[in-house]
Image (cartoon, rainbow, N blue to C red):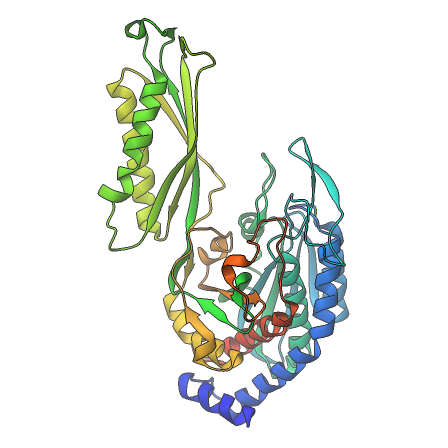
Length: 439
């Protein structure tokens, strides 16, 4: 009965390539669902192993070795050492067709775990000169395990796939150490989307505040760009009792902080999309009666539209340099060269694949279009080059209040592992359905 319902839903929404009937594609998807369920024990075991042995960005050597060995055991073409520790597997289907990519991130975070799990991390390291634990506090261990499961599932139906699947296991999504390159940006730079050329890319992130069994997405700007900035204000030092003898960079910086809050409220079209300008650091001076020669402010700019992002960056520079000039000071503005673009879900691709999400999740009631998220994701670097779709997978135990669950990037972060099978099934089915559809 489930197979009939699945074929009906999928057949109504999607148009398949010549030679592939609705029934044939539905049968393939049903096989994928069954195989995904059979992977559950393996996926949970992989995830627990990765969780117990976390590795920071650009240092995922053990994780990458396990991934590469698994992909080779499936008969895939495997490339290692991409963007330091990245692994890429290529599965060529039995019929000609396009190339679709599936991506998972592998890195952990510098956080000391406090979950009490039997497989909790006890790994310690030194990060930026500070002793700290290492923990998978964002779910990348689950992402890696689920994509390994999807690779195994698709390898078992390869003769029925119309095209090629590229599996991207990426290091350093959380960022690299200062002075290092890494993550999706370096993966793209080193040609991960080429040879063969990728036509579309899919990625997921597990969400500890969304119930198991639910998928969420958003067309267009789903997650924000992230442009960190530092402004150094150069004034002229003076005694605090005679400020007229100097140029006060502290007052000038304070004026900038206030004025920057008008960029979103007065200089961009808020009916188009949301944006945020936050100053997180303001420092200058060492003593109450000394006006320093310099002050510094730093923060972040978030936008959900690439044009709005460019407009904000230009307005930011214009505002701070203008205020500095008006005070007789100067300002140096530096934007982070490794800033993340907008995680922008291609609207046509998203509309085309939402029926697949609904089918694998058991109906439209389990798939929700959500509001934009002002956090950021380096999956956006892939989406700058090819159409991409990013979505969230529920990882919270059903019946739990999201307000009581530990957030991502915290020491108490936990996941309900019963949601992993849906992740495997969704990744594998998205690839199979994309390859089988008419563009």
